[in-house]
Length: 159
Length: 159
DNA sequence: TCAAACATGTGTCACACTACAACAGTTGAC
DNA sequence: GTCAACTGTTGTAGTGTGACACATGTTTGA
Image (cartoon, rainbow over all chains, first blue to last red; front, side, top):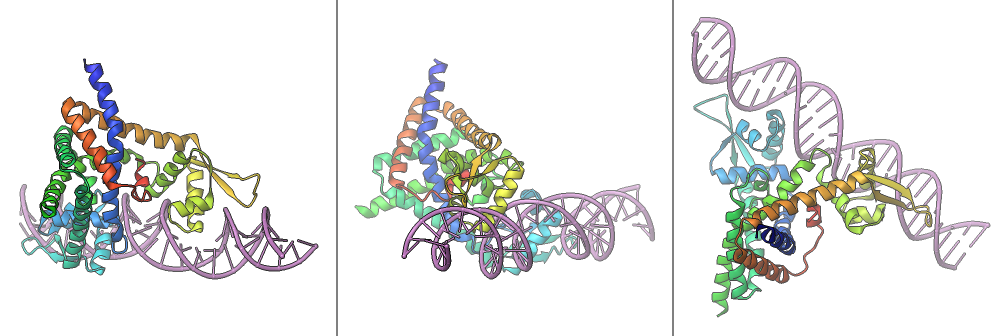
């Protein structure tokens, strides 16, 4: 019966909450040491640049983080001042300004990813092989069922 | 061998990433419609008040969200102006100011929780009973292995 | 060639978060 | 009853996000 299935899903949703809370904790803690260096919106930009792998246009970045181009200019100013990114004129189109990761910015993103993976690994090591297998299979199925979500918001977390 | 176990855990950590990303997506989306009404720090306060169930002292709330008492006063001002919380003098100690949830504030927290549970349920319904059972068991084990994390950061998300 | 469209930057304004110092009222202890 | 400790509030100041209107320089197409 579908009604039974729905009920079962509701129970499962409740059962999954503590675990998802723990996972969120891992993410939140990986982000914590970061607040000394950058704000969350600034980190979003660093993650976008790291994902892209190459310099991005100022306007495209503004669009990606959903802010007014003029807002982005000031954000970029601050990030340039902090040595996180660099501005460069596009040689083939001189009205465009390209934003490029500086080593410090790239390192910041990597540090967050590293810490998160490490923390996750520590927790997983404390589980039995069978529990781990269950979690992996369950999470894979969850990921499939969730399908492709909009990445806008979560890319902020560098996951 | 422990080396083998560590390797296995590292693989599992990688395998779990997409699923945790999907879960984070559920959380991020449940928070999205909220930005019209409150800021994230303000929402943290609403969550704390909802969890407590009763009015809280101004200073305690300031401590809980790790801000200077004077900072908290201004935040409370804004939240009172928006009808989210209410100030009340403690009759038994007139130097204390109690902060209390207004219906609008309570409803905001409930709306977020509701949306998150609903979205989670939708995804879980798309999984087979076996997959669901695996996920539930795996997440419970993960939660146990993670132990009690500091709740400070994640309480922001109202989970 | 020259005007329209484009891309970024500036001037200006508003608002939220944050802290520190100083102040005022309240309580509790001596 | 007085004074020190406690609690919240106000004055002041700085930073970051965000937007709108406008200016400047660049490209492109008619």
